[in-house]
Amino acid sequence: MYNIIKNQSYSNIKLCISMLNNINFSILGFYFYYYTTIETYTNIYYIGIIYLYVYYFIDSIVEIYNERYLIIPHHVCALCMISLFDNFHYSLLKNIFYCFSLIEISGGLTNIHQLLQQNKVLHIYVDIFLFSIYVYIRQIMFFHHLIHDYNMNIYHEKLFCYISSIVYTMSFYWSIQWIHTIFRYKK
Image (tube, rainbow, N blue to C red; front, side, top):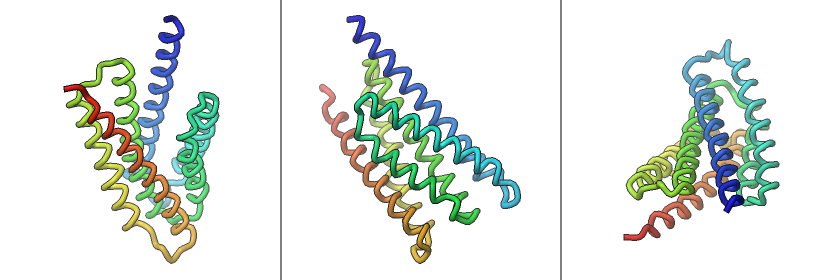
């Protein structure tokens, strides 16, 4: 019994840390989008890059330690995408940071979903609401970003778009998994 409580507490703490990351990066990305200029963006840009590298590296180690390998391809894609940022002009970076701020919000929604589910306080209407926002951000807004914001004649933008498409596909898969949990609610 103690191990169950201990594992549940660890899982809750990990989800809360992950939600803190979702909030931090969302704020950072929206700040970059709304408050930087072409002359002033470099400081916040490098803070964001370092923050993302550190987060994804540490979280990858934690996920490997916990034998949750399904998230590792997402982290590898994220690290590859971050490594391409230096090749982009300011206006594209603004769009990327804005889109990824929204994606971090949707990631926070999945963490809220898991936290409520693990603590057995998730109600079907709350779950449907969280799922709807998640799908809107990940399947509609992200898709719009992919097809409208990249010049497919520029190598680095094309590569970034392809890697983002892999993340989009993962998001689609996770949406299907989530909808299955909604359908399993007892009537």
